[in-house]
Image 1 (spheres, protein in one colour):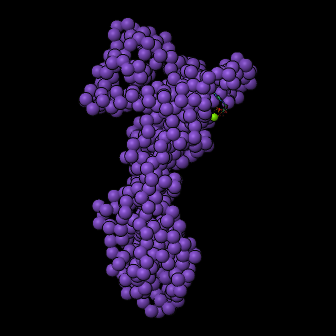
Image 2: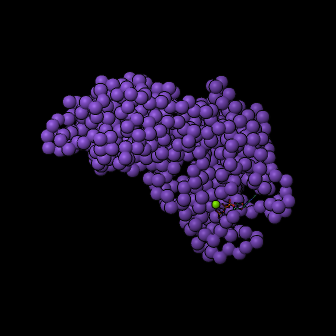
Length: 516
Ligand SMILES: Nc1ncnc2c1ncn2[C@@H]1O[C@H](COP(=O)(O)OP(=O)(O)OP(=O)(O)O)[C@@H](O)[C@H]1O
Ligand SMILES: [Mg+2]
């Protein structure tokens, strides 16, 4: 007898239908599995055999052949187990094979028959109705995720025996629970008000959030770089429902979905500086998203960025520019979105105290130059905002009043973002964020009067800035004007934007003298 069960494999975020075809016949025990299964899928036979045994189903007198179609698609992971087990039961006549039609099945089996949660349920089921699927059976552990995208079309199961009872008609499986509304933003565990003093840092965070500008902090150990960066997502506009689904789909592929089935906050990813290029950008087999994609629509924070492997930083260039990562492998191309707000932090020198008035730096001038040379080029060029950070003063830390809360700052950020969205909607610019305005856009929406132009040209001249830096300053000035609710870009906006590029001069000077 034969039975077919539908399941899915993921390539990036794209679900690929896999038909599990099972044939059974009497004979000396055999369990063949074909259709390009990787080791993790081949091991499925052991799990399925054991789980079926728990239901009293012996395979000793059967020749079982399982074909995973299409045969040219490489399959990996344990999510085929449940489909294979149901296919075997259908082929043995233990459940009606026709009941399995139009049902998508996902789940890994333990030896006892318990159904374990799997990765990628949300992206797999997201558009599953358009593929002619009417119903899905998913692990209990993925129920919330499935409910987010399938509503009442999905059923959740904890044990193989429950699924069997469902298909034999003895006891239908429950539909997945309709999830509660997404957690409100007040449930964040950190707040900008905890960052004492540091007015310049708070201002830079606000500008970064308002215009989606990349941000670099340079400062000694313990001055609060990580603390500041960690609070950036709390002042970004809340995730819309569509954005939340987009981000959760990426996190689902690596099994990082919260119990509610959907991310309620923008992600904050802070990989260690030893992260590999693949870890940062994505790749591997099976292909998984890198940190830059896991941080999509949130923040990617790279601490100790000067210590990062050179290749990793270079690899980051393309995604930061294009907003997507494409990974090519023998089995196909996977694309992941990658549009995080990028925040980097570095010490000013290997010991961290170069230029610190309170502690002496123990690095040789040579080492400081070599260290800073690593910050320059691709990295520095891409940072719109660059801030030299000092430790908070003790009076500010212990006695100062708390600064504005994230809620207050976020309201200003949202207002500035709304101005940018309106400009795009009116067709004045193509970009929805100031950080990606083109030179032509800037000529329209960041026109400077003669005084402003003179100020900017003198700064560019005296600081030795590049043409790229010139436009970056204009973009930041546009954001500062938007935060101030100002239609035109004025002197004070340009002046503040120049202040936020001053590190350029120090680091470039160091690099040039290193090269000389
Ligand atoms: N402005 C501040 N307000 C309140 N607490 C602060 C402030 N600055 C630093 N701290 C305290 O100092 C601790 C260390 O800060 P943080 O880890 O952010 O420093 P860092 O600059 O990232 O250091 P490193 O270079 O070692 O990574 C924080 O956890 C916090 O308790
Ligand atoms: Mg830190």
